[in-house]
Length: 294
Image (tube, rainbow, N blue to C red; front, side):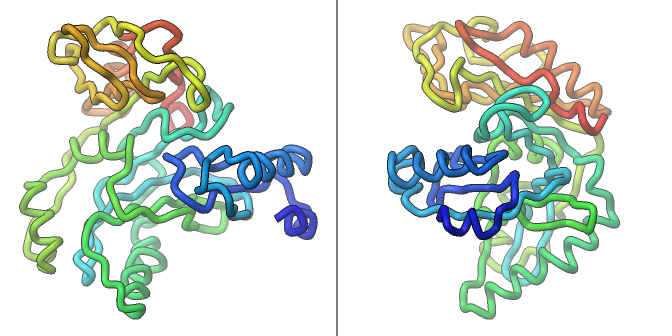
């Protein structure tokens, strides 16, 4: 791995654990020293367990990230509204990669023209290639894209809904989710309506201090009602525990505070208004979700 790094000699670079790592198995070293340290940490010290015993080294791409969750029955691809995730732990895209610190939808830069290009060059060729390999896929196919200067590039695929993308995508889905999922599984996706509601959605993650590294659990959470919710928003629980009627933090990403509005600005304002009233000891959140596209 280090020999390959030296042969490429190009920084920043991207080093990924080859297995599942809860969205945290990616390091973007700025120089050789940091890259070598990351490789030793993954492959020899077991930072990500067996998932990091092998690594993938990739070119660093510069651009705007787009997450496109889509339904496919192996014949057609029907994308839901595109969203934008924020992977780094802290404001201005600083800090370590995480499972996602917040999302917005729709993605303002994923225009109809860009979507049409992705359908022609990425979405449909992907399902056709899987069919040719005898692996026809039916379900939710997640396209992780980067909008670069020379066009959209594929960063990753996932055969599932994404977190925290789903929190902002499903509120804007116009259609019966159960009917859509059944049609997808039965190979008749073209028979059901899959639309997009007007408006926008935003999700802000409240995390435990220290995440995505070590953090303390068991702190009481304030600002939630008896059902774990707050006024004007939907609060998705990712890492909580309820003990004797009191919600406690019990994970790294603890809560996903999600709001819907007529505009992205309105959705973000509503989400952040709720976030400011919710918290626990050492909790933190990014204050710039969606800022780069407003």
